[in-house]
Image 1 (cartoon, helix red, strand yellow):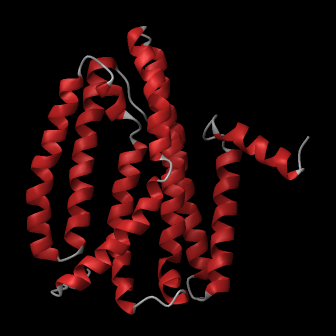
Image 2: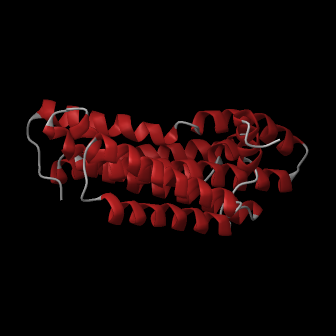
Length: 252
């Protein structure tokens, strides 16, 4: 467990680093959300529930592939990153904080665009209601867990509250329309990310330095990308891969 940190400025600096690094996991989320709003609005207007369900699942798997892969990539290199770039040793304490922030991002992104699906429907009031629930849970959870656990407390609180928040939305859409974002590809993605982590851990955990950081990253990205393409985890990724190969001159 992360030791308690009583110095306020150390608390802020360490937590800020964890949040900043954690924000890399959601790099594609804004683009996915923006791209989904128009199609969702038209689908609700046309009462095309099948299309809404497909958007729900496609945004879920695409965001999960990215967030899970980015989370593992950062996690396996966090310590080397701090040491290699000569950051203060105190920043090593940000690693367990990042762990919970990263899991929260995976939960939030892996459940798809549930917010946009609800907000573009006639049930937009439910979107407001769940926002109120999130705020009501976040404030006391952050206060008590921060007081008890120090800087890791808010990260754990956010993981708990966002899981509840997305769980409520998941149940609403499932019970109201029979929609849910998960498929067998969801399981494969999580297992692939976990498998890539263990491979890199057992191969490189005893080695440190910039060269090992690069090698560890290349191996994980290679394994993860190969798995995603081989298992056909997302129909949206294959066209992108074909375009990359064409531009690199390795495919006609």
